[in-house]
Structure formats: C-alpha cells, structure tokens
Length: 246
Ligand SMILES: Nc1ncnc2c1ncn2[C@@H]1O[C@H](COP(=O)(O)OP(=O)(O)OP(=O)(O)O)[C@@H](O)[C@H]1O
Image 1 (cartoon, rainbow, N blue to C red):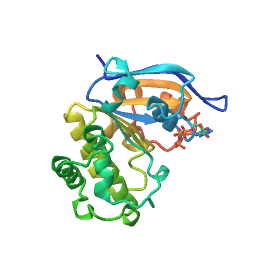
Image 2: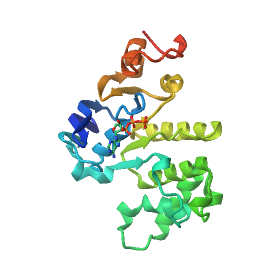
Image 3: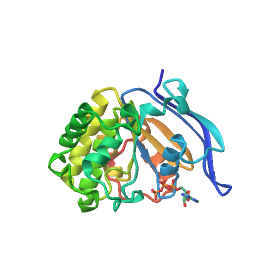
C-alpha cells in the first residue's frame, strides 16, 4: 500500500479554481520534488492535503486511511516566510512543538522529549543555539530549526515547502543529507522545489504541477524537456541537456 494517495483533488479560492482534479500516489521511502512555476498551486496542494484549506473535491489517503485519521503520521515544514519569527520563543521550544503529538498539548515535556529535541537540533547543527530566541537566528538557521522540529515529530510522511529557499550551500547540503537520511529510514518526503538544475540529483520522483498534474512518476522517465516546457508554458530556456532527459 502506498503511504500517500491523492485522488481527484480540486481546490478553489473565492470560486477561482487553483488545483483541478489532482491525483497521484507515492510509494514508500521516496523523495518527491513538487515542481511548477509561481502560482502553480504547489503550496496550496500541501495546505489542502493537510486540511488547512478546504478541498472542493477529492480525497487524501495516508497508509490507506483518510488523512483526518492519520494526521499524526504527517509532518510539515512550511515556507519560512509564512511564519511569525518575532514570536517570543527559543529554538528548543520550537523543536519541542514537534513532540506535542507524543507529549499532549498541555503536559510538560518529559526529559526524554527534551533529549530527543536536543538530538534533533544537534543533527541540523543547531545545538549551540538551543536557547536562542528564534527572532535572533539567521534565515538559514531558522530553516534548520524547522527541519529539527519535523525530525522531532518522527512522522512517516513529510511535506516541506521550499526548504532550500534563502539558504547557503552548507545548509543546502545539510538539508539534502537529512532528506536522504529520512529516505533511508523509509520516510516519504514531498518537497516544493524551484531549482530545476538539482531536481535529478535530489529526487526519486517528480510531480510536475501547473493547476493540474502535468506529469508524475520516477524522475528518470518523467523529468523530460517536453514535460518541463508544458509545465512552465514553454518559458524554460536555460536548462542544459545534462540535467534533463528526453
Ligand atoms: N489565500 C489565498 N486567497 C486567494 N488566492 C490565493 C490564496 N493563496 C494563494 N492564492 C492563489 O492561488 C494560486 C496558487 O498559489 P500557491 O501559493 O499555491 O502557488 P505556488 O505554486 O506555491 O507558488 P510559488 O511558487 O509562487 O510559491 C495563485 O494564483 C495564488 O495567487
């Protein structure tokens, strides 16, 4: 059984259709790049899968059950700029939020939760910043804290919205390493991604999206010149042939 199945999802804002009849099914332990131009509906897809915004139509199944019954299995890393980083809290507390599903919202975190949160911070190179206010972290450091929070959640499926935006080469490398580690542990990860040059290196599968699914499948066979042109309305001219197939 595939861990994530989306069936005929349609989403509208103010009756304006943004996603139409989107269906795809992701096998376990795959890294999936969600690719498409600005406004294609990539963030909307993630938010609608998570029930943050209503779907007009369609279903999301997580390990064969409706998402609503399985939400504890799904972790989310939102776009960094969609978060209020002035909220007075420190890095460790943000990561501990990822443990609430395990702790219970009103209970104090146990020592083992704090230890695990610290380990997650360590994994992304942020342990020295555990007690630092999040407003006093750089953009790349904030991104790392978010990834640590997702790790602490110990989910089976992750949705990450543009984790590579605004990070330096070292952080990008750390994120790629983390994605591969999640994959090795059998996790399924969907990543909204803009850099077409790295798609073939980073992702096993791609979802090419522009309001509808243009193509979905293994990167090897689906990330073709024709599909990319179709996704971007024929506006992509800078790709070298080494990065695509077909
Ligand atoms: N809250 C909202 N209300 C109305 N329209 C919205 C809202 N959020 C997004 N949209 C519109 O829905 C469409 C899809 O937006 P979305 O943010 O999902 O695209 P995206 O593919 O993630 O884009 P980007 O690459 O620029 O982040 C766009 O036309 C956008 O203007």
